[in-house]
Length: 252
Image (cartoon, rainbow, N blue to C red; front, side, top):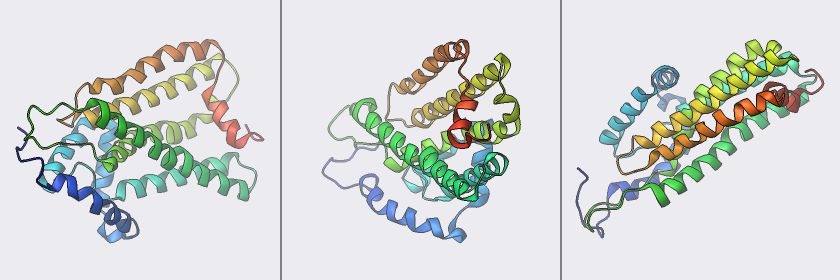
């Protein structure tokens, strides 16, 4: 049952986010304050048992009165792993150190951070504007999705996709970028699974919030992906070749 207090009374849930974000940013450069072990535990279970991670999100809300992480370790470690994976691609396919630096920076900024900021903002707006349950009376505390939590959900959803499209893809890329129907089929299937799993985790992240309804909205993109994949396969589109040529056109 939701707590019942007067709307005019200030509550921790409405006042904490303003002071939480600066503290979150300050902790990015303080490794000693990051829970590295728990972060790797989350990353493992996001790939194997994601519901367990969001069950712990409920515990976090009960103990710290916020849904979002107060520890930036997940973002920092995910960025470092992404940088290492991109460097591995550059070592295998790039032609100059200067271009490799450009590729690493652009992947970190556009593939992860800027895209994440945009998607998190869109989901934050949609959930607060259209998916919140209406309060049954005027004395119920109005709950809203924290923007930082929306960014957490994106990061959680991004990591398994990173494993599939950056790590696994790296080892099978010589096969996937080849010409022919089989490489096109396998490449499209890998991208389809990765994108679908991203949206499934996105759904889990918002479905765990008790004050949201109609969260199945976040599963709809999976249907679009399933419909588009056969069309892309039959048209001869190879996403692996497309993205590899975008960065390493002289070597792929």
